[in-house]
Amino acid sequence: MYKTLITCFILLICSFTQSYANDLEKTETELYEEAVGLFDQKKYKQAIRAFRKIEDLYPFSYWAMKAKLLSGISHYNMGDYSGAASDMDNYIYVYSNGEDLSYVYYLRVLSYYMQINKVQLGQQTAYKALELATEYINLFPNSEYTEEMKEKVKLITEHILAKEYSIGRFYLKRGEYLAAIKRFQNIISNKDSSYFPKSVSCLIAAYSALGLDLEAEQYKSLLARNIKGSDEIPHESKQT
Image (tube, rainbow, N blue to C red; front, side, top):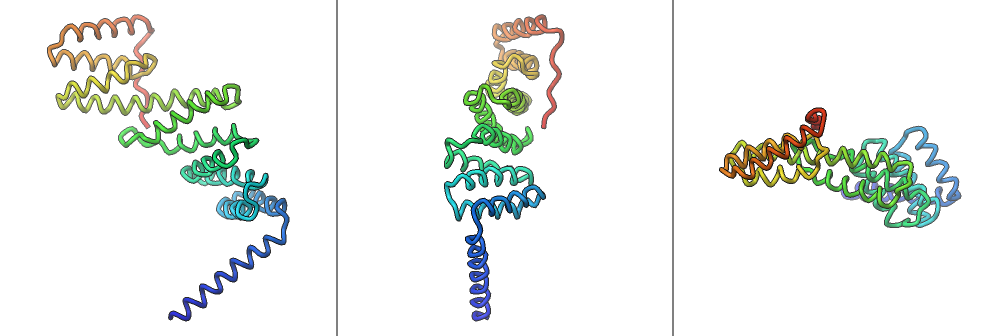
């Protein structure tokens, strides 16, 4: 049994060594073209392995840089958003002056965006995606993707506020009014959010329950001004 395992291990090493020996006989360009061929055929797992070989054999080269980008796109197209984000993080770290940097940052935002959890779950990834989308807008204000990033910021912000609202409602129902107030106050700084009027209404309820009538009246006035300043109260956004 032990000898059999040793034999299999030796054969595996020999096969691996032969494979790399064959690759060394090809130029970097030839290896890249073969990898791109697999990518074009949507054979993403094979393409990723081929791109990785280029990075191993020719680290920090131009084609290794291109291979890293296409490896990330391959992961993204497979639905492996964590792998795509990792590839883009590595690209930014290694090729900080890469020619595709704007697109790499863009794909990194999308990779995190696609991993955002439902409102009922933790939202660490949502906060990270919001941070990266904001960073993108600041770094590449004239990019063709900037407007899309601005929309992503709005969508992610609304998603995060949905989580804050759900927690606030939970505390309000339990009679934990101070905790509820803190959550709703986090929301009302975003007056364009669909959760703004509902959060103000909840603040009125929380302060009234605490017997703080002056504060409740202030929020009633704020709600009245908001309703008067708009044609209608925005509908609750769809929770993901």
